[in-house]
Length: 245
Image (cartoon, rainbow, N blue to C red):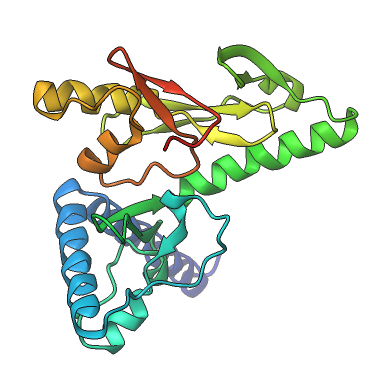
């Protein structure tokens, strides 16, 4: 190799390595719990200011059938254009990050939470594999062990896939995916809910029959998206296919 060619190759390698290091630094920063809390507070303040000024929330249009914890995606660009948010959060989808910023409970107790798009992508890959399996097997689903009434583990061997587990930034537990008998793939938040209950202690006891996902709403930066309700029974979350009133 000629000296100039060798020098050019080294230069390109340095650029690639520098780019990788930069992306790693940005990722570590934007997923740091303190950074996440600051950005959530900043966006929540801007959303409140927008609502107080204009009487509506800066949210994107959503289908009425969209689940509550996925429905109200915040229009961050609209907040910036209205001068109520100084800049787009670096960890947001709009800035090339991994999160959607969501508004939950807008009518009763508005709060800003995150939807992890990496989790959405991984769950979607399993959902597509389940759909393909069902289509090729007369509607049969790749069900494994029964977990709760109507909910099963996923038979990954039947799908020729490795088991998917999602590490929670809240509890550091690895959360599994489940499949409902309708064929819908969901994230099982049971471990996170129990962790939130343990951390909260007796000061945040839910009433019997309440939706236990509210414990996560109070404690975690993530909204409990891609989930079914969990009914709080005898101090534990129980998955239910019905909407809790």
